[in-house]
Length: 89
Image 1: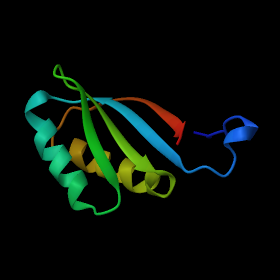
Image 2: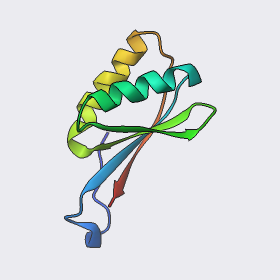
Image 3: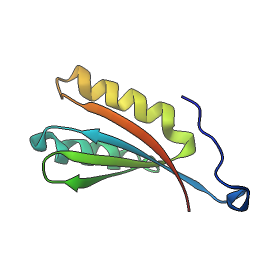
Image 4: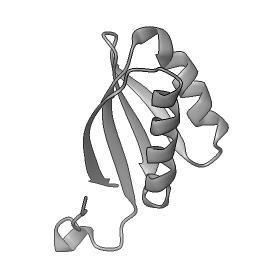
């Protein structure tokens, strides 16, 4: 997946990535604590109690986030991966 720079006036501003997911409600706390344990990776935000969540992370963590999601899936957590949105701060 390729990420494009926002408008020219946003050049040089830090980027925050938001990975949209759906996960089982009973696994959200575990996922959040695991992500928090990776100091500096980012954090998990619950967007809707039905299981819609977002992982917010800096640009350098994309590969690690993908690996961690794969690890969650290998543990049996059913994750539906959505869009990755680039937000300029």
